[in-house]
Amino acid sequence: MPITVEERHQSRKAGDDWREYGYIVTGTDSEVAALNAVPGEQYISVPNPKGPSYLPLILMRSVTVEQQIDGPNVNHHTWYATARYEEQSNNNDNNNTSSDLNYSISVTAHTANVKVAIEQPSPKLASGESDPKFGNYIGVVGPPGNQTIQGVDCIFPQATLEIERRYSRLAWNNRVKTIIGKVGMVNSGSFEGFGEEEVLFGGARVSRSRTEVSASYQFLISLTENVDIPGIGSVSKKGWRYIWVYSRPADDGIGTKAIAAYVSRVYRRSSFSGIL
View 1 (tube, one colour):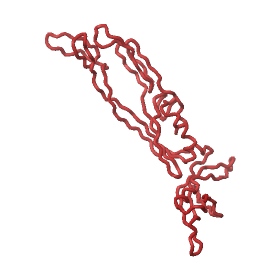
View 2 (cartoon, rainbow, N blue to C red; view 1 turned 90 degrees about the vertical axis):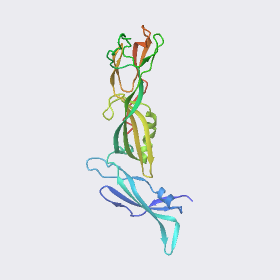
View 3 (cartoon, rainbow, N blue to C red; view 1 turned 30 degrees about the vertical axis):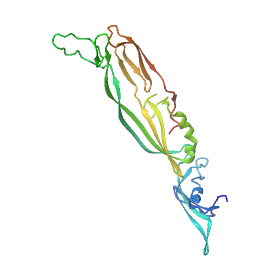
């Protein structure tokens, strides 16, 4: 038996920012099925003296159902439902309506091995010894001609921006493919106060109820900076671009000598305006 839903005659009630609708649900003896059959969203016509009427989306905030009682008997396949809706938007962009729940930035640490110091003063030498002249290399070990550079593990920050937003199910369905397509891309313009290519979209965690969708978006931050390359000088690196150095063995046999520094774009760019 198919489930049908009909609005009850003269069941509507209204306030400044809410509407209440009554329904008759038939074709099931399951309370859960009856609840799920009630529309989770509605559009209502609102007169506008300055222009055309608009249709703001109203979302369900609560719903109750009870079985129909005919005298001493209970009709187990008919339910009376009452749903309360609240206005979500007062403009024409109903399919993209969202609201902020939370905005946070967290900074964590990760480690990376560093073999070249930013600055390294002349060493204090043992009596009778001369400076081996390792330049800015860190942790040089081994006899001359067979030396390796151990470096040192250093801590670097990693900032993550997290934005949580809430949507109607209709609004989420209209944007989910756009969101999936932008994972792993960087921003082509400014975004939430960060510059071009400084934000990498890492995806979203999504939870869904009958009436709405909550999405928690993750963005990784890498700020534009100047990087000092020994032997070359300061090199500007924009956001998430990757900097790498072509080197060859040093003339003195210790380590390598930087020849050229490259700044490569490895992530596709996209406008993030369609994500949130």
